Structure formats: C-alpha cells, structure tokens
Length: 172
Image (cartoon, rainbow, N blue to C red):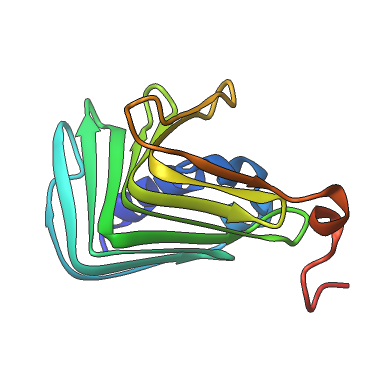
C-alpha cells in the first residue's frame, strides 16, 4: 500500500467517529492494516480514492468494515471520508475498556468541519446506552448531536449508572 495513503487513512480514522474522542489513545500509535478488494484514485492534490470489494480497516482495537470506502482530497488534505455498506460497522474499545459499536448504511466524516453523519438505519451502542434512527449528525468539536426531526423516529436508551459502571467481561 502506498505510504501516503496509509498515513492519510490513519489521520482519517483516528478522528473519524464521535466515539473515537473517548477511544483508546494507544490505538493511534499502532500499525493500521487495510484490506480491500480494490483501490483506485489519487491521494495527492485534489481527487478521490475509492476502496472497494469489501473494506476492512484495523488499528489496535479499532475495526471498521464496509462494502466501500471513499477518501476525498482537497489541496493535498483529506476533506472527507465515507464508508458505505449494508451496514458499515465500526467497533472500538474505549479508554475505560468498554466496547463501542456503530453501524449505519453510510458513515460520512467531514474532516474540515469535524462533523460525522450516520445515515440509514444507524445504531451507536456502548454500555452507557444506545441511539438509533435514520440520521444522526455529530459535531466532534462541540459534542452536539442532532437526530430525527425529519419525520423519522429516534430511539435512545440510557442505562442506569449501575449498569453503565459495570466493567466489561474479561477486564481487570
């Protein structure tokens, strides 16, 4: 794999989803493994690189799986990354050892504005609770989340502190 693409993907995925702000910081210091059926496009200047044929990205406890990945570059900077699938899935262990899982038909990260949008049957789960619906927009800078309001329903489950405080199985 082209070293520039690998470095770009590390930057993208290290900040690509809301839960990653609480993700294991040590994951960012680990090698990233990317497995895809195909890759085409450009990673320099302005343009798009497409990963297809089943995409698997693993770095430490981070595990992203999708049918397709798309990286958009603007002026040699990553502007956007999109994972699509039926569904696209992201799993990662949080700093406290608890698991986080997010699924959606489309996971779209606007790196310029630091906004993540989950679209199409999304669900984000952790021991603290879950949120699901058709569309969620999450601002990584402010922590503001917006979901629903478009005529669809949103379902949120907040676990009681006693359930959320339990350590995951196998942890010390």
